[in-house]
Image (cartoon, rainbow, N blue to C red; front, side, top):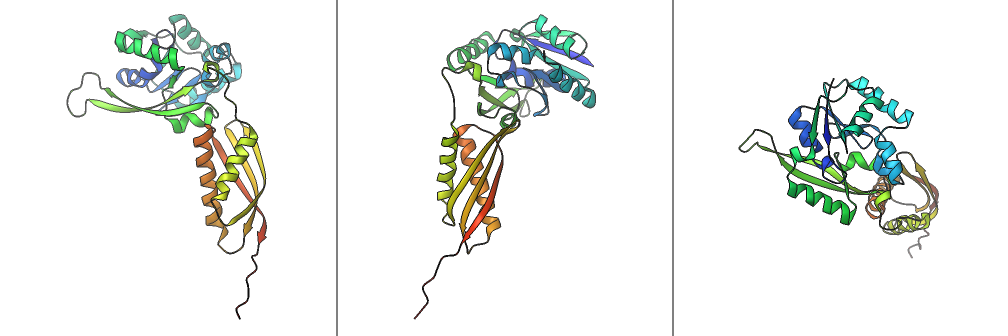
Length: 280
């Protein structure tokens, strides 16, 4: 397996350009901030962006946890890539990552200055310094399950292909912009009562739902599980109604809270039969 490295100080745009570098140098997979990424999918790892402190983020990026390192090693053994790109803030960091994952030492060290202009690097540093934003080289749909509760936005960028001109000389890259916990300017906290009120507000938009009796909120590894007990008016078929409510609760919660909603479980505890006045 060939290993190449992209090196540069924190906040200079390495992750933003990782997919382009991987494309240009034939790397099938990349390792960035504790994650193993291939074909826009996160295959294994724990994101450094999910850690509560900067020290925790560094430890995750260096794979200091044995279980974390083993998970990525096993996945690398399974997919057996021919070429791997490793991102790091220095040669020493990249070498430590390679050693932790029992990979060959990189035979090529690329500097961020080799793939980005000084103007682009300064712009990346300004965004990091003023807004605390980080890029993960994977689409939002792949990132959210691993960073539930972290503010995540999609980023679609067009890059030029190396040594190509004409109509097909550029390609689109889907990435994610996140604001990690350790970079917040202040605290970001969502109370369960706020989540419950959002769910009740969604349920009110469905006339067939008479009452939300109980809401249970569970935090799991992949995100959040919602379970709710309802009283529903008898009349309309339940399956399409409950599917529509499930989808709407998930959509609204993810939009308003940045949580990744794994499941919305709905239990109809009571059917309310409305009395009708007999015709004279």
